Image (cartoon, rainbow, N blue to C red; front, side, top):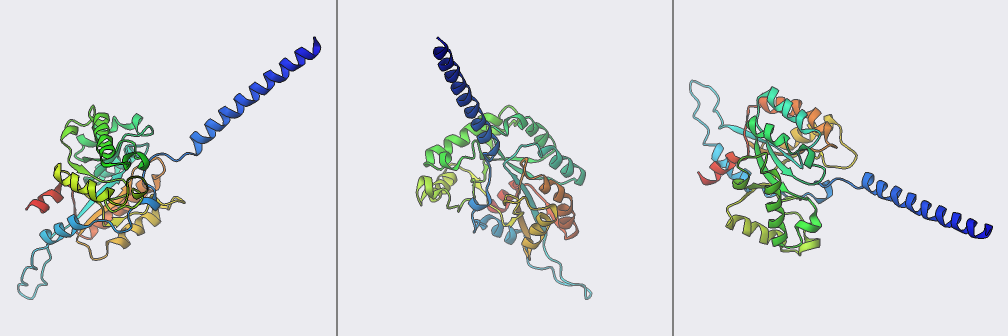
Length: 286
């Protein structure tokens, strides 16, 4: 009798221990698993800057002739602040800064599980004059780059998720491919021609895809400081007259928001006009 009771106790304790360990493992995975979003190692090393170069040529007419010994004047300089992977816990801070500085930006949005509670912020984003563009619903490379059909299904799901908060969600035609249009991480899942196929299909469907030519490098591991992010941006500008700046809007990129006022001030002091990426369309079609 006593042996039977002891066996039952041991069985109960064993089952309890297995349950506790299983729960701990699940919690550990949930805590340690990175949120869906851009990773520095997956971003294209050579972005497609065709739109930026074309816009620069359109924006830079021949220098006006000097008068009375005055120096020749250059055409306008433009900067496009873009934020990937939001909305997030950082979005409100970013929007507050943009509002205070009076400048527009473009948000390439995601609707993964970690974004869902922040999707209502898209209403404020639109109301304050910023552009909503499409990035990915899941941002899971394995899923979206399995084949072209999977990519377009992901984009359709993203539209459905943001539709309650973005009035013209069905008509948005600006996209940024996760990893960029010349990324290679997609090759692991959809083959070496996956991006070539997607870019051709995007053009056929009337989409405009845009990469970047200035990078904040804020998706890098180690969480770069606000000062590092600022210098990454301004050092990357060089002699560019059209700058599409890649930044990220995630819980982990609060330092980007901290650097944002100084980044904006630098562009203002250097004579840049702030635009949303929809302005690239007029340059492309002009």
